[in-house]
Image 1 (cartoon, protein in one colour):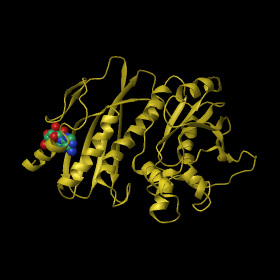
Image 2 (cartoon, protein in one colour; image 1 turned 60 degrees about the vertical axis):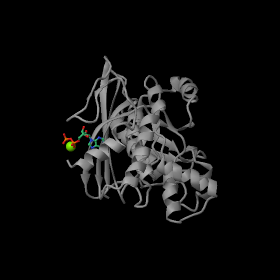
Image 3 (cartoon, helix red, strand yellow; image 1 turned 120 degrees about the vertical axis):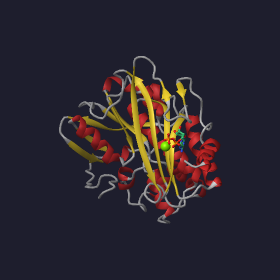
Image 4 (cartoon, protein in one colour; image 1 turned 90 degrees about the vertical axis):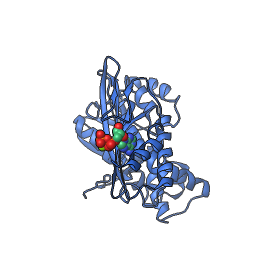
Length: 322
Ligand code: ADP
Ligand code: MG
């Protein structure tokens, strides 16, 4: 590694996040050393963002940095896990000081917000690609999984769905909203707020959970398949932002909030008898939660309106190889 690469790491990454007491050795050696509390199971997730695939080519460096960590944090939220230590593999076309300063501000802002320490990484030259690996822990036996939904469970989602999809429609000039709404919707895409607190609070309460990265239908289907159950989804109970409500028909109707990805909200299932406790507990955190359906014995996902009218869809979510 050349001197300039060492300088780059020292300047932008060595001291940018938080210093956790469970890190014995951070950036600077051949590998990092950190320690999970006794009685905890380690949790790991990794996500890669490729320019032009996972974010538009003109995305600001700060947003790329923020989002690269946020998408991993969302996976942790879905496991009910506590995020703690991150590594960052950065492939850059050139070492641009200004770009790195902004990227580091975005990444490290998210790291500080969620108490994650950047403990190492790798820096290489090539097409812009950002890979973040996040490690953390959950008390033994308390991880939220996809395969534990039970017939009778209520299906909940956090926040509102379809905002990130609407952001892409706005960027492509497919529709118009007010200036204030536009700002809000774009921030939903560029600055998702992973529901880590919700996930941790749900450890004792939810049977199954997943984060909505590929669209509600696709992600809920993952839960149903893994759990060997089915469900009925009440389409018009799916929560929408006022911005999306105002242009829903222009952007394809309910298809968008059901199949657009990138919202990074949680979808989880809760036994009926825990409904009141869940709604009380999660009511304390920012972002609402809404019951959108019920888990059933019969396999498959049935979508209908609250009027009883069927909603026909063959579409699911985003698939990179389709
Ligand atoms: P090695 O050659 O042993 O893999 P490097 O020379 O690649 O180590 O990196 C030196 C140190 O800087 C290591 O501790 C590594 O984890 C850290 N590092 C490299 N790139 C980054 C980065 N983009 N962000 C954070 N730490 C990094
Ligand atoms: Mg290396």
